[in-house]
Length: 141
Picture (cartoon, rainbow, N blue to C red):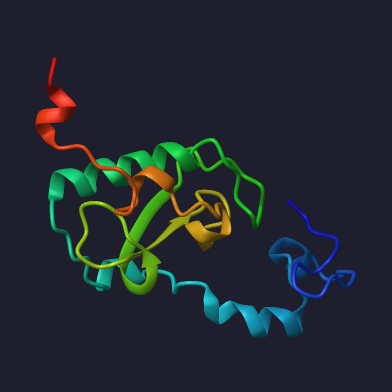
């Protein structure tokens, strides 16, 4: 996807790199620090409280973003890789002790983007504050 106006200040974009990113050079310098660094989840710690629940939540998040497109290049996120790591400003996901900064890597442009960029609902039923069922309730006949 090529942007014609800056996502931060709404000025016209002329440079091809700026059009791809969606930000002019000045605005990019102001917002790029908010994106998680590439490769961070491999070196960061994830505090998992229940591996089965965490795996299920991760699978559900992957399924939900697979129908979306990359905010940078517009490519399908069906084969995007999803990552998370402990972060104070992250999502309070089921199966994790600490809030998780969840982000994906676009398979086409290889840029990382946080899940917050795609959704504002904080993943609804996958967060800890939503109604939870016990295994007995889930598998009762």
